[in-house]
Picture 1 (cartoon, rainbow, N blue to C red):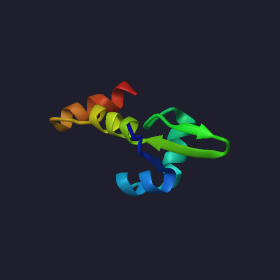
Picture 2 (cartoon, helix red, strand yellow; picture 1 turned 30 degrees about the vertical axis):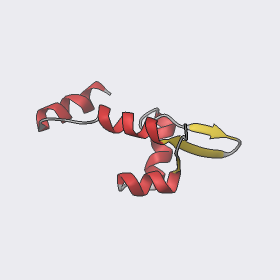
Picture 3 (cartoon, rainbow, N blue to C red; picture 1 turned 90 degrees about the horizontal axis):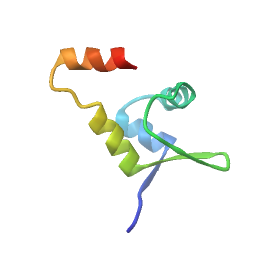
Length: 70
């Protein structure tokens, strides 16, 4: 079984956000789980997909409730 990993730049491009946002999320405990090996940060694709699925909303009310829960 092959595990795919994304680096910070690749994940930022996937989510269409700044790499600095990912840095802030790691600092505040938001965002997908990550691995830190030495000084390098990587994200397992399955963790990224789980994070994305957890953020899925069916209505705008649900997105407000999701933000309030954080």
